[in-house]
Length: 147
Image 1 (cartoon, rainbow, N blue to C red):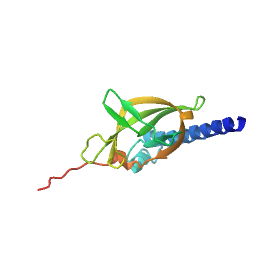
Image 2: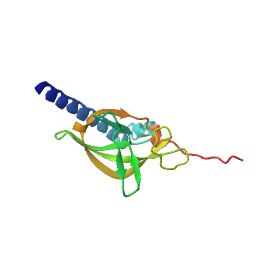
Image 3: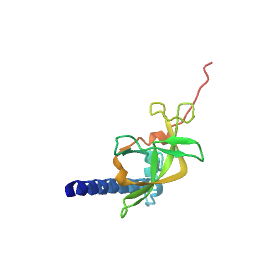
Image 4: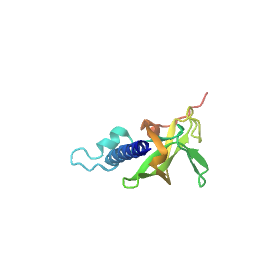
């Protein structure tokens, strides 16, 4: 029993460290103030957000709903991480389809939009992190007429 508990703590610590490192890199993208490179990192990525999925212990992507804006999402941005409690605050990213409408189908999502809606997650409920392409935040949805 002790080894299992120890392994879970180690796993949580590893996830916490990984998210902390990811948050540090995201902060670098967001506010690099170097003398020669300025905001070059953000321009290279095209955004200040690294989108991600959090996979729960049952193997399903974590999902949150926004009652204020009436959508559900599996896509998040790290806002902060507390290494002492191994909890993270994430903001919800709104998934959009090719027409710019909300979509909760993984296959239909072509763009993600940042929101100000935040949730706190205890990382003991999470078993994996899946990073996504930053292009999902910068992609333009252009619908051309058929005629």
